[in-house]
Length: 187
Image 1 (cartoon, rainbow, N blue to C red):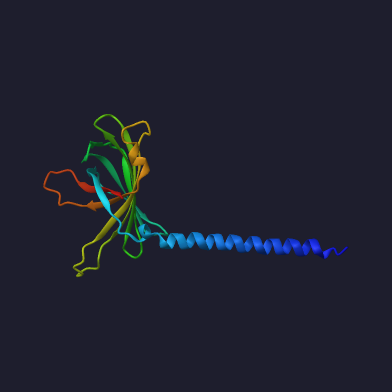
Image 2: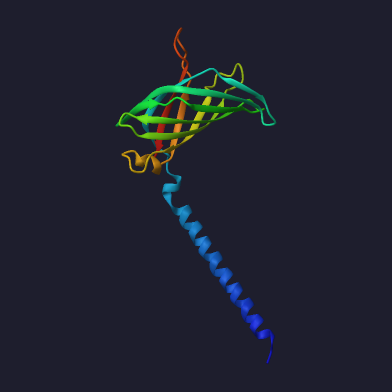
C-alpha cells in the first residue's frame, strides 16, 4: 500500500477547505461593500447640554509624551430632551498637551438625574487650535461613553455611541469658571 495516499488526501482536503474559507470571507466582504448604509451620511441628534463647573488647573509638568495637567470638576447642571440634573463634584479632566500642540483630554465624572439616577461619563476629546494668524476655528470634538443603571429609564444610554462638542465661554467678572459640553447621539 502507498503510504503517501493519506498524505495526498489530507493536502487536497486542506487546499479545498482553505479555498472555501477564502471564498466565504470574500463573499462577506463583497456583501459589506454593497451595503449602502455603510456609506450613508452620519447623523446625530441632540441629547443634552451640560454646564460643567471647573476649578483651577493643576500643572503636573512635562513627561515623555508632553505636558500633563488636571482640571478638577466641581459641579454643574445638564438639561436635554426628557432628562436633566446636576454634575456631581469630584470628577477630573486629565489633559495631555502633545509636542505638536494638540491637546488630548480624558474627563471622568458623574451626572445625577432629577429623579435620582447616577450616570457615569467618560469623555475623550481632541483639541486642535490653529496656528497664530490662522483664522480657522479650533477643532474640538469628543467621543463620550455613558454608563447608566440598566434598571433605570436611562438604560437606552448604554446602547448608543455619543459625540460631544466643547465650548469655553468668556467668564464674566465674579463668575465661576465652566465649560459647555454638547452631547449628541450618533444615529
